[in-house]
Length: 488
Image 1 (spheres, rainbow, N blue to C red):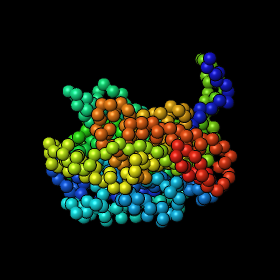
Image 2: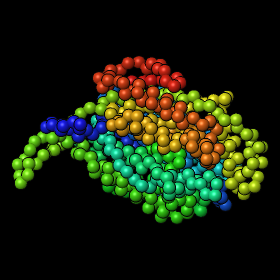
Image 3: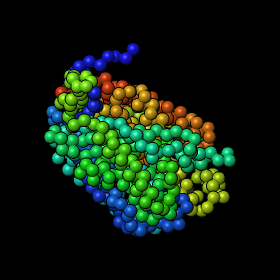
Image 4: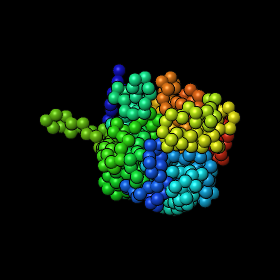
């Protein structure tokens, strides 16, 4: 029997309360930079930019003091092809800000039309611009984070869930072959998690968008660097709100647009507008900033009218975090020579692309029979943020959200580490999916990642809201593997 509604009942709006700052930098690379991300591409240097590529920093500072501050950075970027490059950029940011590794995340949007993020390609055409671009990327992250921290003011993030049909399942079987393309027979997670960031006076500071869909609209025919669909989404929402957008790529291992692999930037813009309208619809579904609807009374008219009125609310002040790691087993990897022989019959450009990715995979990520796959879990008041370096299938986010209903859970792939490691489902391994034969991880790795994240989320949710007023020292906590924890 459903619980009866009573006067004074509220429609809960999950929120994060803190000192909040947002800052943006333009990270559009120079023309001519290496941007060959597709095997069939017969070109290597970009010829310009479709849209501006940006980096956005969000600073969250506890209301009682700067200790325990957290910085979330999101950038239009492809994927880190080597551990050393990602680590070099992030360590510069950590050193400049004086933050613990658990308190900073750097997430990439995963556009496939951006510059190659691999300094080892400096000897290739357009590659001479990559080292300088990586330096500029670190500089932009430092500048934006410092500005966001300095500008932090009392504010709130109010969370809403929307839906967008842009993402589709991309696991298609044709004539017994596992392909990467739209499967009209399969369903896809269409969840859009939106955060409205406002100052105490209601002024909009920004919008957070968490959506799972590979930015693979633009492919080998396109010679312009581009944020793909994220660019048009951002332009639409920023025009409507007059504030920056921070985009987080969700667990999109098997999700992509139905219409993709094109050189037509108009298709990417159309895709972005579809997501942008979904974001705006979710924002417009929220009540006035800092309020919730409360059943306040009855007005007698031609019918007795139940009146729900906006009432001010507080809460969502606890900021805490755990840095853990899931222990994942590796497959027995073939040698580069064996891979070259296996791919001998495909076109040379595509073969070199595959071999290059395999070579980078073996430098830095693999060390022994297993890997410690890091997981960042932050409690942001009433919401949870989960981030990891790889490309998990959407089951990762749906599992976490089903396990913790009523709690907004942001999930970010491609964060703080190499983005070339897929975590597919067991079904993907069984069908011989690209993601399954590309990854070095054994079947069952996705389940281990889920178990680790669930344990870490349970830990941070166990903190009482009163802990927001305390400042205990960092302590060691067990998770599926070692976890470092901060509560401020």
